[in-house]
Image 1 (spheres, one colour):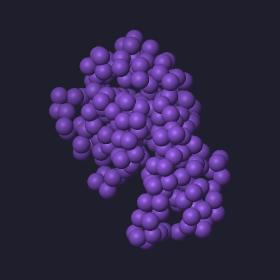
Image 2: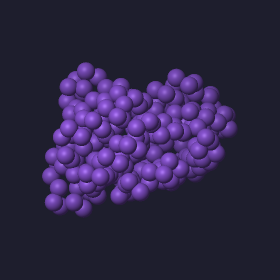
Image 3: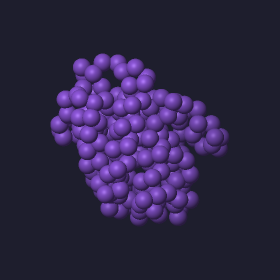
Image 4: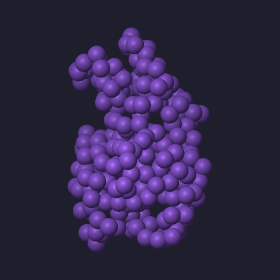
Length: 223
């Protein structure tokens, strides 16, 4: 069994695509830009970019925003997201059972996401699973977003000197999570029920593949 399991958030623990769509469309409409379609936002979410990258991916003609404008966009998006988060987001069935099983076995649980820490903490509390996680890493100026391994190499790994790379498992749903795990040199569990898709070459390199949290729980129970 792994000693530390690193979870992505959106598309792995929580389904929040409806909230993302509502907040993105509201933000672009507010600032007078072409409103992105549902399919465009879903494709964007599959690549798990940070918030700034999301804006540019959805509107390639947007151009680089100055810091003040980018702050205004980000604050409006987050305000809109917060307004609908509780009623539009949901925990995937079986996640609480998966977290409970891992915790009972003494496995440490961490979140590494490109979503804001504030939003992650609010959702974890809402779903009453916040006590499962020892550390949460989200969108931050202190480290680059996934798939850059900076947060693993500078924070997670050094603070666990008794861990080897083989002691970690990354659980995620997108290519960003796959490339993060590869850059860190750790095993990957791909959850098919989330936003992303992996190509055939990537699938050959992952350790686990599960189409439900329950399936992943059974796979990890067998270790």
